[in-house]
Length: 192
Image 1 (cartoon, rainbow, N blue to C red):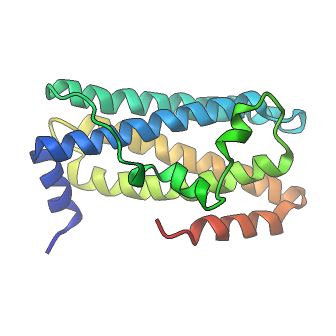
Image 2 (image 1 turned 45 degrees about the vertical axis):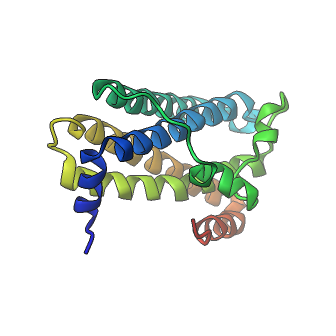
């Protein structure tokens, strides 16, 4: 029977699995960096105070992508192509979850509803990421090859989760509670 520890140990021990794992993670984090950077740039005037937090989130995601690429280099591996079936963000977008990339590519300010959609989607995905990283930290936080990276990313994911939660609470107090509840349920119910 596989446990989280034994599964991740098999990934770490096998160069092909490790290469794929790190490539998927690096690609996803780089994509998240771009998305958050665009969102920070497109925030409406009513939500401009969020810009530093969203930009910091994007910078952290970019940093995580660099960390995963560095883990590959240290082992003498190069990134591999990422299968479309593992592109979590695009899988969600195809189901209408989160902000569409077409929206982020335009040079048009987001709406307040877009901001709520972004925060709700981020709240759910960051909770999943934080839980996964806590599990990895529990089993691999002291691992000589990946421990430092796991601990750093774990802290960042917890920070991202906290700010998304705080901002959603702020927006709920401003009268958006039902919209937030609906979007959280929609995002959380997606089975990927």
